Structures are given as C-alpha cells and as structure tokens.
Length: 221
Length: 257
Image (tube, rainbow over all chains, first blue to last red; front, side, top):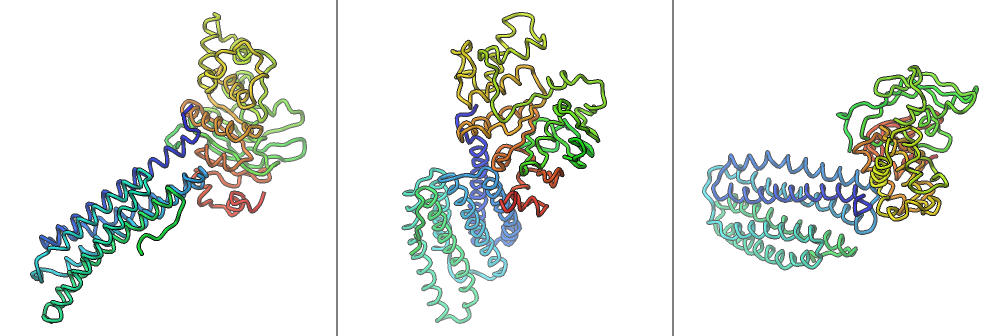
C-alpha cells in the first residue's frame, strides 16, 4: 500500500502541476519571442507566436478539465481543494499572458517595415522583468510559499514605473511629432501588453497565498 | 486509469433476472474490461447487487430465480457451459459488505481456500501463499506476528483486508466486491480503496457501492442502476462531470435516490 491514503489524488494533482509548469514554459517562450520579433521586426516569428498561442489555449483547457475531474472524482478538501481551485484560477491568468504575448506579435505585424520611432530600451527591460516575475510566481506556487509569492509585488511596481515612463515619453513625442503618433501607439501597445502580464503574475501570487494560507487578499493595490 | 485498450473480461448481453415472477434486472448489456475497476451505483433495490451476484452464479443458490441472456467470461457463457460453479467462484472471488472471517486463526483463514481446493502439496508452499496473499492485501506487516491468533480479534478494517487476502489466496482473475467498506470507518475505507487501486494492476474488480464518492474516487468505469435497468455506463470521469442521462445527473448530484 502507498504511504499516502490519497495516492490517486496525489498522482493526478502532480500531473496537473507538471502541465502548469509546461504552460509556464510555453508562455515564457512566447514573451521572449514576442520581444525578439519586435526587436528584429521579424513578422514570420510574430505569426508563429500567434499560431502557437493555440497550444497555450488548449493546454489551459486540458488543465481546467483535469482539475474539474479531480474535484468530481477525488473530493479534495482543505489545502488539497485550495490547490486544485488555485490551479484552475492560475491557468486562466496564464492563458491571458499568452494572449498578451500574441498581442505584441500582432502589433509587430501591423507595424510592417516602418522604422521604429525610437530605440527599444525600457520595453526589453519590461519583457525581462515579466519573465522573471512569471518564474518567481511559479516557483512560489510549486513550493507553496506565500512569502515568495508576495515578493512579486515590488517587482510589479517596477513594471508599473517602467510603463509609466514609456507612456510619458511616448505621449511627449506624440505631442511634438504628430507624424509619429501611429508608430508611438504601436510601442505603447507593446508596453501595455507587458504591463498587463505583470498584473496577471500578481493575480497568480494572490492565488498562491490563498492556496497556502487560505487568505484571499488583493496584492495589486 | 484503464482504457478501452484493456481486453474484455466480461461481456453481459441482454441480461434479465427474475426472483420468482418479479423481474429484478431488465435487458442489461455491459462490457467489463480486464485490470479495471468497474463501479456499480444506484439506490437500494435497484438491482446492482443482484447483477454482481450474476457474475459468479451466486444467485444460483437462491430458489425460484431465473436468468435470461448471456454472461460471457473470456468469451465463454458461464451459464451455458459445463463450467463447475465451484471452479467459477475460484476464478471470480467475492468480498462482502460485512467482514466475515472464519472463527479461526489468521493463517487458517487465508489457507482455507488453497487447502480445500488442493492447491498445495507442502506446508512451505502454503506458508508462501498465505504470506504473499497477506502482503498483497496490505495486511502482512500488521499480522505477521499474530498469524496464529484468532482472526476475530483483528479490527474491522483488518478483518476486511483479511477477507480480501482470503480471496487472493486462491489466485482469482476477478474480484467482486459488494459494499466492501460500508461497515468501515473513513480511514479503513481509504485503506481498502488504496488497496483496490493496487490490486487492479493484476485483477479485474467489480464493486457495488452505495457511496458514490467512493465510485468516483476508485473506479475507471461507473454504471448507474435504476429499478433494475442500467441507466448509463461510461468512464467514471464523465459520469461525475458531464453525464449524458438526466437521471444520472440527478443521482450524482444528490437530487434523487
């Protein structure tokens, strides 16, 4: 006999966690490629990101389905139940992160061959920060570590500052250079998508705290 | 979880069963696959235990009963062939609602089947069978130092695992379980369920249970019986998340039954 009397639950939940990590890896790759496609103006890569977003969507549904079945068949309680419910919530935010990466890719396609309005400085930083935040939140999820989850909050604040700085800079350029409004807007869209990814990571952190402690709290205030 | 790739163990075709003039089962057709756990659920009197007892001809012992249709075990009709019911019940063991060890030692309980079936030549062989059966039933560690004690001194959960060991000792292919945990507390229940999950790697298990959460936790396929009919039979994950039949939906959500 296994050491746990909930061996079936443990095994099926472990498979869900594995799929969540796989989803995280796909999203991390999508964000990295989205930045790459923007930097290199690579429309082929951008189209590939959009196409591959379907894989992210399907994996999210697969995980939700597995959670639903696990609740229906194994009747988890307490921390097990919170873990499954948190998993269901987390994958919704993760799937939307994939959409944000695809949003950047769509912008790259709309930009066509027009030269960039300005060199990319803060947007690559935001992309790097988004990936780091995603990694931190998933580590906290795996480790069931509420304190580690909270550590994403100051980093999200940095993300917001970076976005604000980009926003102000681009509005400034637009006000002086009306012919650059369209190209400035494209960059603003890219930055906005990255900023939203940061917010989604904060949502994941909230779910990790709930899963670990049972407390529901809003971190993004 | 089992898949349709597993070989067919039982094929039941258009089975009707009567107690005297009263029809208890009507037109049951169902396929039971090897090395899967098949759970049968439904309200009291729905026919699920009667159906279970058709699978090893246990109903033969009840007077004025009659069966129509086919019960094929590995393709052979167990009611038409010249198969000896005693041989059949060696191949298809049964565990009952209430643990029913014999008032004998732990050892003799497990050794009972092999002895009367003449399965052993030497005491050493018998000891090996008893030990292996108790290991398989996840009971060995608890009883290895009290093999000569009376089995009735074991806890209820241990007694039920002893009954499972007794079934395993005659090397069956199928284990039928009729409400195997209804007399047990929640921890003993989980132990039996865990044991069932282990045993399905080698045996085909059919379990009747009032406890639909148990069916959900432990089985690969679930069938809902209702007034002697099989309402729905499908993958357990589907029965408990999106059943096809409104009656199944009502039963698994606790609206009826």
